[in-house]
Amino acid sequence: MSLETEFEQVTMPLEFPFTITRGTQTTAENVIVRIEDEDGTAGIGGAAPSSHYGETAATVEAVLPDLLAVVEDVGDPHQLERIERRLRETIERNPAARCAVSIALHDLVTKRLDVPLYRYWGLDPTETVESSYTIGIDDTERMREKTETALERGFGTLKVKLGTDRDLEIIEAIRDVAPDVRLYVDANEAWTPREAVSRIEALAEYDLEFVEQPVAATNPEGLRYVYERAALPIAADESCLTAADVPQIAERCDVANLKLMKCGSLREARRIVHAARAHGLQVMCGCMTESNASIAAACHLAPLLDYADLDGSLLLADDPYDGVSMPGGRINLEGLERPGTGVVRS
Image 1 (cartoon, rainbow, N blue to C red):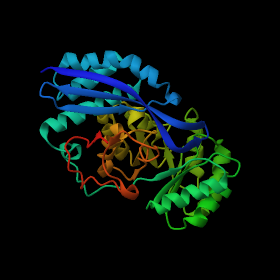
Image 2 (cartoon, rainbow, N blue to C red):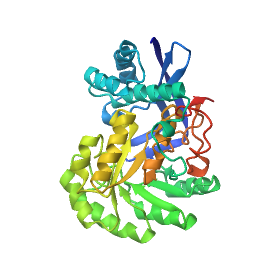
Image 3 (cartoon, rainbow, N blue to C red):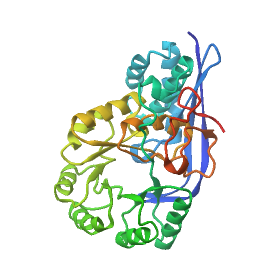
């Protein structure tokens, strides 16, 4: 079988500047991969690189020729395991770049079979979870206004970025306008272990689901310290990159947060889910600021999840791709009428 491959970088402005403890983002730079078979069927995937993990759009573009050469050499997109192994052997790191190829291949394979990805995986489209909508760090009044906007758009689950000297003030303001939403918070490694325990104790009165990554991923014993003393459940994000990390976090958190752009492939994402379940952990799938070129694929994991934070495309001012519909955060796999991941040009 003959396969043709190509890729392009796209820069997409965000609807609002998005701030976490590590900085502010106003645009999202993604790299879109396209893999086409000899019949003209094309699979689409996206890379949303994060400099926190050593990747940029430039590094993705630098390694994609070698990765796509593997795909062309194998020739058969259905040999997903073989291709994934060879991709790792070719480029050990650069997980976002490898994941873009993985997504495009899964999209192509399931289009060739004329089934949506969730059906290829044997999953029930009615067993999805609701995605959260993220409120980035801003002045308190602006965060209150963003919360009101999210409520007007129908979102019933919110994630709030913390790591400031007014965290309690922020949560109090958000709970004031959104008393009934499901709410969890993400400190993005901002706190010391002792500070985390103290802040979580104060936050517990605001009916939060959990606290995500309270301390640095480089401090696993600090994460254990917080987990053993915290008044709320703990989720591990930056501490959980691949399935190999799950045994290390199993006694340090309640929730494993996987991201496609951290783990490197859809097959690895499912391995993380199964490893987390084997260790008694709940599972969440998060994202970067991403186009539906990659978010659409992540949505098909929803039946396997306890939590989803797949609002990456919803944070964009305009996405050149459509994917799985997500009104008010409700991941509507059941309503998907296209094969593959569901991604199409908008």
